[in-house]
Image (cartoon, rainbow, N blue to C red; front, side, top):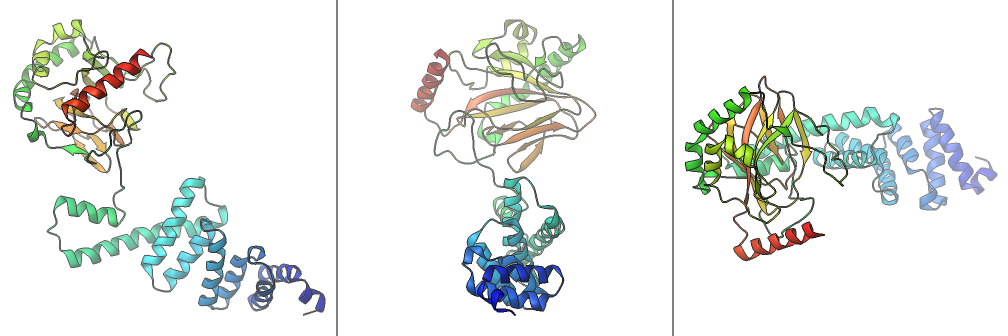
Length: 379
């Protein structure tokens, strides 16, 4: 090595990078080690040194160089992937998965993966799937398969088979409520007389549909003096509603056509806020329609569905749990948790939809929440 290169660590670094490019890892490693000893930590190319050390089979030295780079740039996708690969090769799958997952999370934030890293990135994703499956099998070997639904879900969250979702209402958040996706309809005894009236409601729906579904209108629609909703179902006939109560007012024409449905709704403890609620309608979803993931405005209500016209392969996802509509089985869920619905089947689906208060909220706070939304409506 000449004296000029020795006295200029930046020149040494450049020579080391050139040697690495020329596939001379021994010379590259020697030069890059010398540069690393003389340059400020932030000026060194630690990834290049790691590559040279790996080419020589010096895994520990390669990993140490990556650790220096991660101290400087903890979220660098390439370094995280390489660190994961070294941990994988060292027989440490849990650590490998943690670095691969960090790289995946960062790629989701940045929106892309640099082209030279795509192969390693795809390998990392495949490795995580395989590793999580092996980890789950290891856990179940110790736990057994006789787990409660709650523990089974906890294991799926731990192994990455499920995602974690929380309440995230778009307008109003009431603190301290349980993060509960679906409620048991048996906890609401007033469903029983409503379900007894399903045949009468089905007859009313059949009559309405027999004359061309007059009274149904797009659920997602434009409102005066408001921006149009950002939804592919805007003004679409794929998702429509036949309103019985709307913003606290009875829709007299529809109500007169469907007295049995109005009688059934009389059994439910509908939310009542002047100018806001009750809200109750038939919700009609045509085949192929997809209600994209979204959240409701507030977490103080529950949405109730009574199936009127069920359809195969038509489903609702709330958080990480997916259900289908089954005859005689109401669904009660928190719509402030991300949810979506899709009709993948061959026929339309219609449910009776209405809102109730969450049972955890006492009368005084219900009244206060009502005043808040009345005040908002006056602005």
